[in-house]
Amino acid sequence: MCGIIGVTGASEPLRIILEGLEMLEYRGYDSAGFALVRIDGSGLWRERAAVRAQSLPELHKVATPPPGAALGAGIGHTRWATHGAPTEPNAHPHLDCGDRVAVVHNGIIENHRELASELEERGHSRSSETDTEVIAHLVEEQLADGASLDEAVRFLLGRLRGDFALALVEAKDPDTIIGTRRTSPLIAGRSDGVGLLASDISAVLGTTRELYAIEDDQVVVVRPGSITAYDRDGTEVALRPLEVSWEVQAARADGFDDFMSKEIHEQPRALADTLLGRFRSDGAIDFEELSLGPHELRRIDRVVLLGCGTSYHAGLVGRSALEAWAKLPASAEIASEFRYREPVIDDRTLVIATSQSGETVDTFHALREAKRRGAMTLVVTNVVDSLMAREADGVLYTRAGPEVGVASTKCHVAQIALLQLFALDLASLRGTLADADVSRLSGEIAHLPEAVSAAVGRFAEYELVAERLAGVNDVYFLGRGTGLPIALEGALKLKELAYVRAEAYPAGEMKHGPISLIVPGTVAVVVATRGPLYEKIHANVAEVRARGASVLAVCDEEDSTTPDLVDDVLRIPSVPEVLTPVVGVVPLQALAYAAARARGNDVDRPRNLAKVVTVE
Ligand code: M6R
Image 1: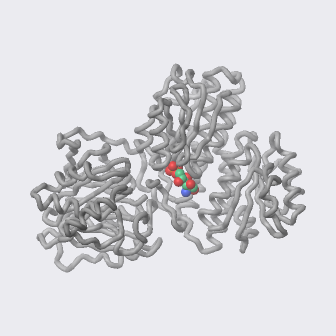
Image 2: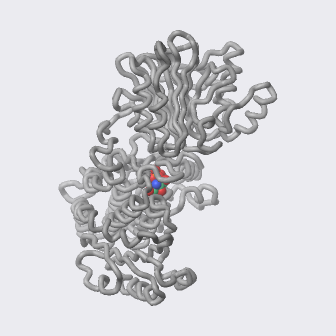
């Protein structure tokens, strides 16, 4: 969480920082701030604002440079609070005792308490409750001992525990920004005498497309038009260029009320781009970028799918496809739990991490743990060269374009389609499905963008049904088999956006306890897919209705039975049952979107959340 930007050599550094922060706001919006070095040597100019979800507009109000101040290098930050409440004193940048050094940070310094008490004993006084501030004071001591800023930052690498990306400036040097990272993301860029640092490419795409990766524990010295990277020993190392395929426009709301509605409407395109070039003319599936070859894939005897939140739900769909088509034992696991178990995996286990951002720390560490235990690893992610993409043995990219809304939508449908296609490819490789079945299913997957387009076309219709949720504070989402991951995703969306208690349950489990919570007026959203459990889900609908629940059902447009059994329907285009998750989530996204807007909630900046979760 948290976004970092740094710029040097620009004629309008403040503008670049503020524009960059707009693009990084999705990473956290509890507070925002910047610090710039005054060229006349009179020190740092720092401003901060902490107004939940309004920090950037507030920061703009105070971003008027002091009269006559020419500004050099600067750093900016948008925060998702971990240590210390979202207040102005806790907002970044943080300064040392003498206001000589400013630092912005993304991540967590795990040993900050120990470092803070050391620093206190040595006479430093703190002005925030954050873990970050210790960095400014540690650097202050190094500078006082004669180190340069980059040497001081190299020293930090031996003292800090945890995950972090840092950018620092020093009052006496208006040209230089120093950056470093461990696990948390940071990239560098340059163009026409300008040097940049940022948490992600969208923040600097307006200024340059010449971007470079920074590896763990490297220290980069960014000066106007130049970037030099050093390893922990101070030896200069080569920079690795990054390929940039996204356009700056793709990360803007473009006439939609918000990013979420833009991204919901982009789903057909996101899916089409994800599937583009994946089918050969002979009907075979083509994963050109996959570095795991047929020999390695044939060795697999088990698959574990890791993910968090929405990406975990995609993993559940992937699990069913792997079992049904590739006949492989498969399990889907919540990454934050998996890492701390004693998972039984070996070199014949394929571990697939699914992550929109490729950065979620829970998933990243679970993936790393799987690798440490000898598993073969694969990542399904939307972000090229992201942490997980670099860590895994193989990577498959969803090509959904930047997803900015905190609620994952277009990336989710792309993840599901890609996981299903991969399962199909494995089935073909293992000979567990006849060629004719592989071609038929591939053809059906290839048509998903049209079905999703038809579902998105019903958005206004779905929003009308959402009116039934007005004033409702508890909703059950029920599904079975193929419908369960859809129900889970619908409940997550309603919780995170509308702040409504929403519980997703396997419909068949209700009678084992939760049905006691159903009382007259309870709302249940039931996903009725027309597969082997169709009649059983109807029985479950009857059970909750008999106890007074009103039922909204997701069902396909050729389903003539379900509408008679429920109070209202969210119709989806008919697709083969096994592919329903891609289409079935669309009305539930709309339901959550409309319920959130009806309650006056900010759908792009939901309470307490951030798009990228880089803390455990
Ligand atoms: O970037 P990731 O896919 O790893 O993110 C995982 C979750 O944090 C994410 O899916 C979260 O649940 C979304 N906000 C859901 O809409």
